[in-house]
Image (cartoon, rainbow, N blue to C red; front, side, top):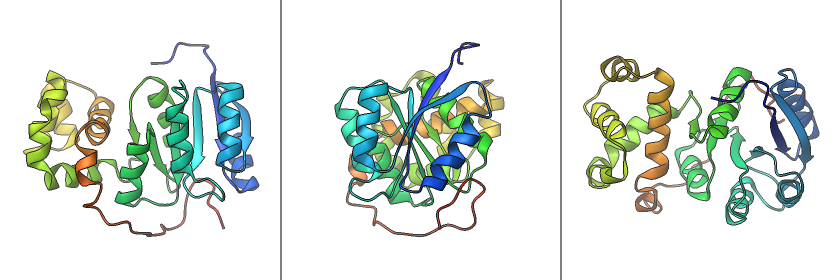
Length: 225
């Protein structure tokens, strides 16, 4: 949980000015957040991070010159404290896995609402992973079931609570059921589901998932034309 009165500095990277302007207005409608800079491409975003050291960089997946994935990889190599949230129109499994492998702490599709964006920022600043509610549970459950054996072998990397959550997910329990059984919040369960994807065996599926481009429908956030 963020300390009361502590400002969260955010940088924005998107090649469409209207998207950046919309995101700035949305974020600065909440006094908890302050936008410290904007970038039109990955190269500018990298310089922003070096110069302003924002707590969070919100970056589009597809940008000219240097895309969001390469930007995320380079920021990871900087050993920066900046946490990266990918904001994209693509809810595709392959892109999500690539983003997490590249070091992204959050992945949010543009069909999400503003409250989801605020929650994503709060979660990654608190050290958790965040996956869009529109894809997190369905994707994670499918992913865990698909690589069930591999993931169980790697469960030694998890905490005791995470292992219990993992087993319940594999047994088919819903997130609300898991929360009730383990007496933890739904947000904790969702965060655990996101962390499983980030911590367990992503390299084992590097060549197993085909890249697919599947544009999504109308968005509630600012969507590119």
